[in-house]
Length: 127
Image 1 (cartoon, one colour):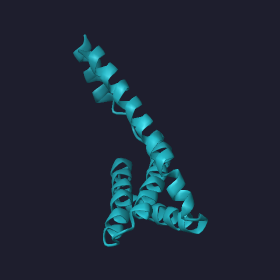
Image 2 (tube, one colour):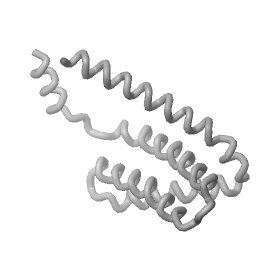
Image 3 (cartoon, one colour):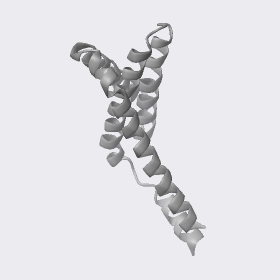
Image 4 (cartoon, one colour):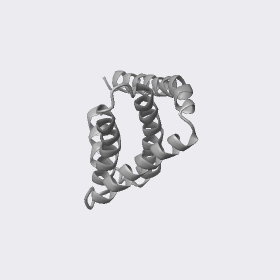
């Protein structure tokens, strides 16, 4: 059972990575057509959303990361819903958001405490 779970997990992660790359490549021309200043403005807003969520997230790093990611992913999309016809801008914002959130996760996930109880439970279940 553990082999099937591990295989499916690796397959899902690989498909997710391919999908993310395809989304970024598909939206790249749209992003570049907006101009550098619009791209920078979107990136600044995403970074501000992440910082605000991180600072308001509570005492633990997992909670801060969760709120930072949630605010970053939701605030920009909600703000752009009131703009009919802003599909290219919304796509560009979400791709920029995705890139910056992935960078945020990769930086801070190294500082997360490892859950040894889960690791012991997996070893016990396999035995």
